[in-house]
Length: 97
Image 1 (cartoon, rainbow, N blue to C red):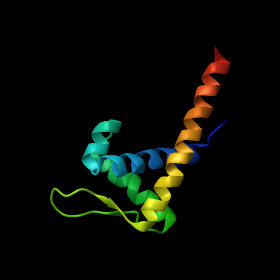
Image 2: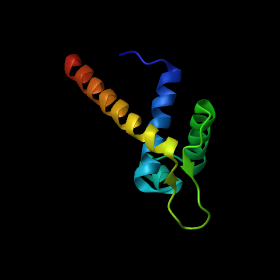
Image 3: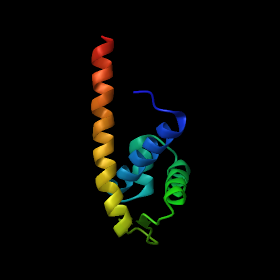
């Protein structure tokens, strides 16, 4: 599996999106992924701009970020894609041994 740079960036954006959905905040996702909060914000802005859809509702204050209906649909696809990618990467590592 040879991912282009653009595909690798999109997969990183999907991982970041999934982390925000799971953890409920940009800062928690940034900490979990070892990114800065601004990098997480930038990745999500790129993803939303590319898709032309708002994926997350960002409340003010300490409330959790929630998914829009579009975000909920994307999350289901993101989980499936990320799972398949992880399986493919594991297969490639096994073949390299």
